[in-house]
Image 1 (cartoon, one colour):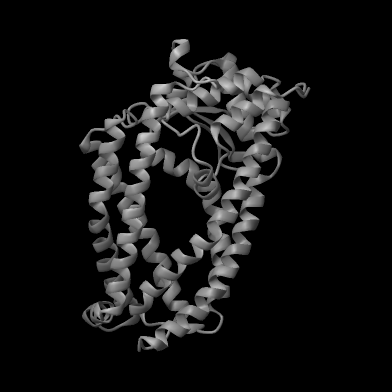
Image 2 (cartoon, rainbow, N blue to C red; image 1 turned 135 degrees about the horizontal axis):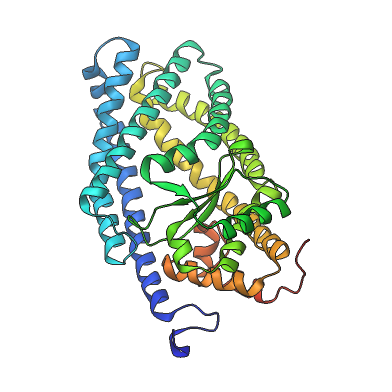
Length: 379
């Protein structure tokens, strides 16, 4: 990279031009998709089509929910397929995806099957609760959601990696020992270091901690190992370890517990009001499912700015702790530059975009903070 090709923070000018171009296209696509789905579901609900689909689904509470949900789920998938295809084309065009159309279709089919199966179970349980406990269903759903989320946080990261990617143990004893020592310095133990073979599908790089307790392990992508040096990898992992050190997953989960309780209480009131207004057979009428979908989306929009602001604060704190753990600010800054350029992440977004859409501080802020770091590494 020549001096003329990089800005004052080290980001590649051409890569960031592509990042801005890609971000703008994705934003427009996302707005079109959300608006289109919102209008379609509203029309489906208000036109009487939802009630007609429930009539077609037949009698028997379990069967009615199954038939109604299955038709609606796959109709929405078909409606969203053009957006998914365009998204994949963008990923290929900008060099982020290396998947063939066949490989992409296989992964999409896996996601479709998993999403359908899990959501069907959730919807069947929801409507059973609506029938049997019309006054307290939302509290029971809240409690069940907490339990399912805890289990998923332990099992899902490891399970889904195995479904979509091949992985193996890191074949570099020196680096593995170094990363394990870093974890111990941060106050936690890990099973080992595993490498996800993501390069066959994507050019993106990443590192993470998967699992919890005795199942916790370090996960690196093979792309990260190819493009980053040991010091840079160490600082990236230190950031993830810092989240664990500050119990950020637990704080995030506590936030989820609070916001989900408020949301479900609001959904309970909205569902009862809207079902009566639209002439449905009560809150347990599956024809009212679009009411829950639209109301849940609105609740999510209401909470998003607050949750994203809290996330950016936690990420900034994790950056600071990563620098304190490693004492390698230049390696951290270099790693941030490489990650954002390689992943075509917008390094200097408009302030409003950062405030309303981003879960991490803008990359230029993270690089600037690292270069200004004057602390010493923890021993």
